[in-house]
Length: 114
Image (cartoon, rainbow, N blue to C red):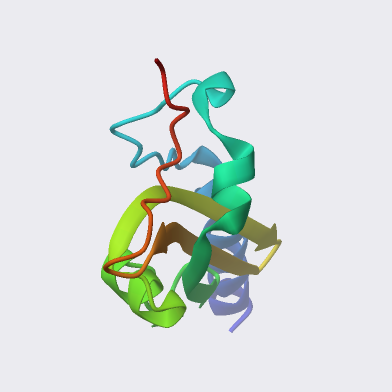
């Protein structure tokens, strides 16, 4: 029984620290921060979709772009970002979408160059 307890404890500790070695980066189209038109971005609609997890095992929710756009009533996406909140055993990964509805002026995240 003592061995079983030691094994269970070891697995629990390993599970807690396994995320520390995980690299998570889905960014494929990264832009320099100085090219973002912040004034235009602040006028845009915002939608957010999050996935939460405990121990990175028990997960619920969704964090895809289409759900974030739907949550914000956005039909024309101008800018997408992700944010991660991590509290030891609880984690929350959110996709945040900025944009406009069809027919409105575009809310692109890039500054206009002229």
